[in-house]
Amino acid sequence: MKDFDDYLAKLREASVILDSEQRAAIILKQARRLAEKEGLTLVEDEALLAENAGLTEWPVPLMGAFDRSFLDLPPEVLATSMKAHQKCFSLRQGNNAANRFIVVANLKARDGGSGITAGNERVIHARLADAQFFYEQDRKVSLEDGVPKLKEIVFHEKLGSQYDRVQRVRLLARELAPLVSADPDLAERAAIVSKVDLVTEMVGEFPELQGVMGRY
Image (tube, rainbow, N blue to C red):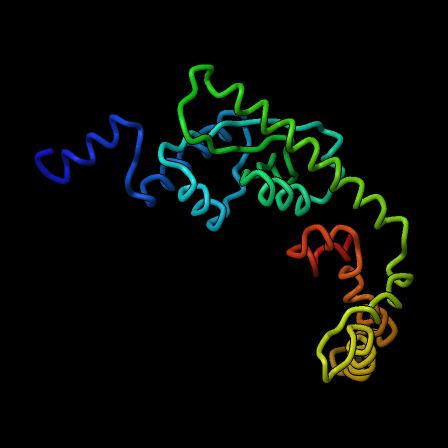
């Protein structure tokens, strides 16, 4: 081995790209290209990009698909499930979620990646089916019905439960609403249900969706 450049060249011959930033750039460029080819837009995620760059030595983005019926799920659920379980990027078609995803393989497969794509499609189908079940179960219960369950979640050992917290916020919301020309009744209701998604099945599975699921 003559020098560092020779070392890098030999690594490339062995399908290894040493620089993680270069791997990330390759992933981003190729993922965008795959999306654009299908008239879609890549939902870019810096943390997910860095994670995939760290998990691969020779990154090869591939596009897969899932059943269109799962598009009834909120886009945040689709993106979170695919990211959390399979490290996949979501795609959009205009302002809507697309039933496609980008998975990053760690090699250039002889079959063009069809086996890797098919495997990820099977896993994602199962994971989205689980998410769909949680979503449907949660929608059977009104937000108000979930409020008492907040008594079971500790907010702070000296400040009580999340239920206690909500009662304090409820009073403040009603008091402050007139100062910003807001409806006191609506402000109070918003405060009362503001933490209910903490007791949902969906947030139990994906804690990062707290503060999001209540709107659905």
